[in-house]
Image (cartoon, rainbow, N blue to C red):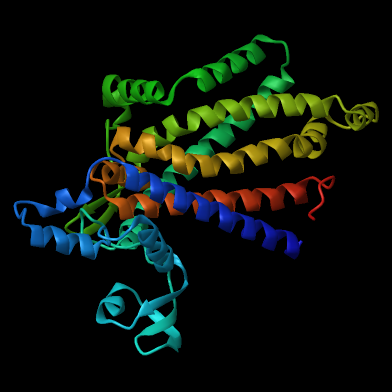
Length: 351
């Protein structure tokens, strides 16, 4: 198993590296110059050159990419300068020549062009809101989806089954932006007096006394984000449970007089949930990326909201940092899914 896990992490490293290179190159061929947004009223050539040198825009693209990967690498080669001492904390492994050193450090994502802060600090502030949004949406989707899928399977061919399938099809086919608008109108506009919910807002609010959590602002974004995976989980649970209930060992248990609730929860449901668990864990990673759109609509402060702003500001370091975080989360979740799924299904062997 250890060999398999190491191989999956090795493969995941190349996936993340590929994502970094592709996004880096795409961002550098987009029209517009982020330096213009930093110049302000000072349009002098000297100021422009200083900013370009500071953010390495004066160098060839391939050299910018190499330097960026060097900053990201935990083991990297740097000059022994005061500027590097200020950029990141490191431990010198070995000196290379008179002015260079091989160091051990945390990945350095650079400084935001539009905000002048370390990107890692911005991402740490934002990732909490995005994580709780994705987790809440997945908790809602899996709980309701599995429950309604079971109800549909146990009432196959009835009006209940038809209603659940109709809800599932509607949830899958409705575009996310339509869902977001409907959720806002119903719960935060027409029914606002009963729900007490607002059209827009963030989970974490900064005040003069510190950070306050407004959990009511999490409800509508989580509902919007969780509706589509809920619809898919409904169908997966229903179809998987129906397939398991038709197996020989289930018929044998019935013939022996095993109570129905024991057959369902002790024998059938465990095996029926294998594909559902795969979908749930896979969707958790997808929701981290899907949260970008929902956060922007609800003005919910998180990775998505700040990344969308960074794209409009051409703030390359924030966009790259958010991309790396989401890509790493995808890879990690997929590795965990493979391992958990192999344990749940004895027919699968880890090689």
